[in-house]
Image 1 (spheres, rainbow, N blue to C red):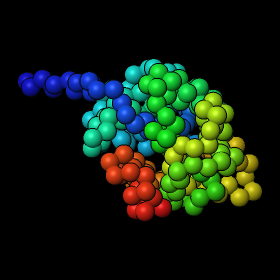
Image 2: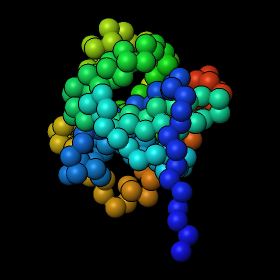
Image 3: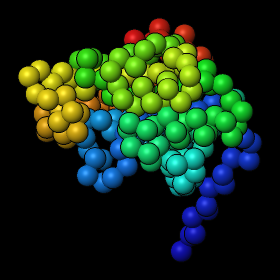
Length: 198
């Protein structure tokens, strides 16, 4: 029987950071609010990343994208306190907020639509609000993934609800496309990714 070789963790420290936002408990896995986590999972799977480990109040792993060593991070602090994990990570690596790419859901965008921005306000997103508060700046790139509009439904209930079956066929390829946007952003720069995916 052939033994599978364990993948070695990258020896070089990360130069870029992709943060997927979500809530850590299993009951939230399939909810609209957790698409950021799912994009990070997709990136880790695509690049054969080492198993996620706990650090900075988060799950982390590292991949190579072009010449960049990229740390993937899923905060375990719950959405409203995401900034705690992000700030701890940046402080440890003495990195700039501009080295971040934050991936999150957005119910103001149509289902499956991507929108990359260099900076901006939280737009009502509690995870982004927390990151802005902890870093003291709005100037970090973010990738928003549309989850559809709640309409008359309570927004909190909406984002914490799972996608119905008919929407899963739209969101699944959108998550793959979001992972591709992250790859282009890391390899070719934010401008190239914005031109291709916005």
